[in-house]
Image: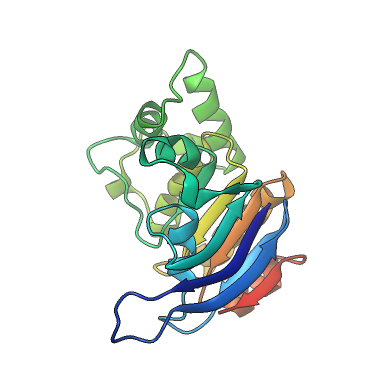
Length: 213
C-alpha cells in the first residue's frame, strides 16, 4: 500500500538529515507503531504522507501512485482517503460535537443527505453518541480526542495517521484511545501511529509492527 524508497529529508543545510536513504514498505491493513526520540522523524513521516511537505529526494508511493506527482489542486482529494489525529485536538470551541463533525464533512465535500446518519454511526462506534450536543470545553481531554477520532473516520479513510494522539492525555484515557484505534484497525483501516509510549501501544495492539526511527 505504501512504500518509501531511498527517502531523504532535512530542513536546513546546517542540520543533520531527518531521513537519509530511508526505505520501508507498509502493507494494506497493517498497524504501524512509529517510535523514536524527538527529532527522529515521526512527525515528518506523517507530514510527508499528508503531502504537507515533500522529501528532498527519493519516492513515496501510496496505492501505486507516486504522491510527488499529485498536482497541488488535487491534494485535497488525495487527503479525503486519509484520517488524521493530532496531539492537540484542533476542535472548534464554538461548535458542538455534532457541529464540529458536520463542518468537517462539509469542508471535505462529504456532506449529503446521509450526513446525520454517518455522524451518528461514528459516534456510536466510539461510544460518545450521548455527547453530540456538548461543546469541546465541556469535555475531558480523552473525550475530545475521541471526537477528533470520529472526525478522522467520517470519510471512511483507507489510512489513519495519528501523531502522538495520547501525548496530552492521562494514562487511563491514553489506553482507551489506543484501544479504539485497535478497533478501527480491526475494521480494516491501515493505521500509522507515532508515539513516545511504545509500551502502552504494545500492551493493547497485539499485531502491530514496530518501526523505530
